Image 1 (spheres, one colour):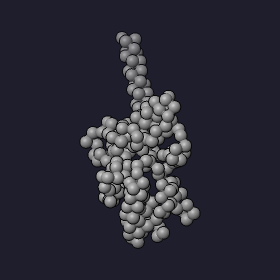
Image 2 (cartoon, rainbow, N blue to C red; image 1 turned 90 degrees about the horizontal axis):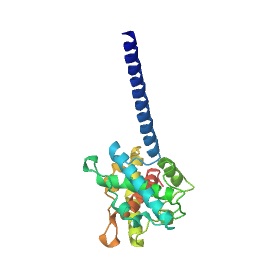
Image 3 (cartoon, rainbow, N blue to C red; image 1 turned 60 degrees about the vertical axis):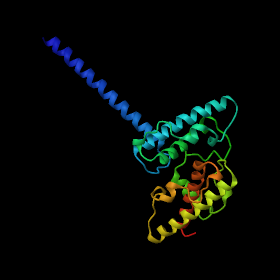
Image 4 (cartoon, one colour; image 1 turned 30 degrees about the vertical axis):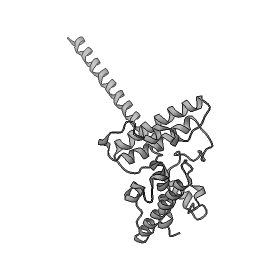
Length: 231
């Protein structure tokens, strides 16, 4: 009887140990996943939307980058259909689709360039750096981007598309930044409908709307910081 009880106790102890290992492993994996995306911007939305979009985008980007590297070629991500669509694994229950696409494309670029590095568009400045650091660097007194459009992204598209989007975004951001500066508050870019829509002055003749929105938002971010700081 005592032997049987001892065996039952051993089994129970082993079961508890296995459960503890599984829980610890799960927690470690979850922490690793969180840390993996810590260096990416947080533009709002649910945790599930951001996590799913970043994971899907990064995986698709690495797949395309690995394939292009094997063919000894480098492409602008905007030339890749999965990047333009940016809806892999998206579900309407996650929330805003445009926000999902933005996270997806950010991770796609990093994944692609991780597998297929290139000097195109200063790829050394990818999302390995924290967004706050990039904002600080580009907006200090000695290194402001301002309206020097040559310092902004070069992601393809026509000159009219790029110029119009950057100018419209910068103007809208500067206006909002100046207002918030006077009120002594600094808001997240995603709080502004102009930033989320990113379509002011857009015309279909310019070309790809998602590319326009990307330029627009970069202009808005810089304009907001300049306006907020009173430049």
